[in-house]
Image (tube, rainbow, N blue to C red; front, side):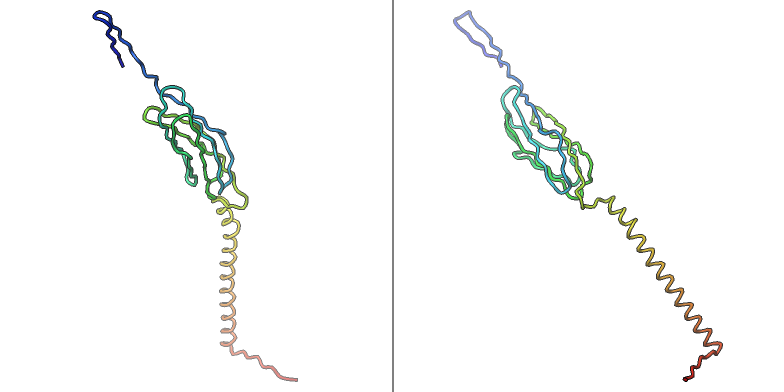
Length: 179
């Protein structure tokens, strides 16, 4: 922006006014948390103004896996402000370490902050691997025993019928006499 000031007939000055560019800082505390399957954790997101006029900043979370949901409260604001990020982990989310990206942006700037979410297996809650192992070690042997039992029953029933048929064909008869 230029301002032209004229004083008198021969004196003038030009004043250049530069706008200080908008910038902000993003931080999340703590940067790492543990959470059990089926539970929630909270992080504090802080946005501070570095320079320029404060502008609206919008918050979001990226690199979110299936079974993980989140909310920001509030989800936007003008620096300086803080927001609470609440992350909920479903009961069937795989227990492992997740790196999630907190994103703060507006039309001028965009900043990221990585947080670590360590999902821990909740005692008593089966994972897909647990289910597969259960099938292998419990259900398959039971099915095998049932199949073998049916086969043996069929074999013994046929042998008994064959024996009865042989006895009948040979005409053997058993007679019992009383005392």
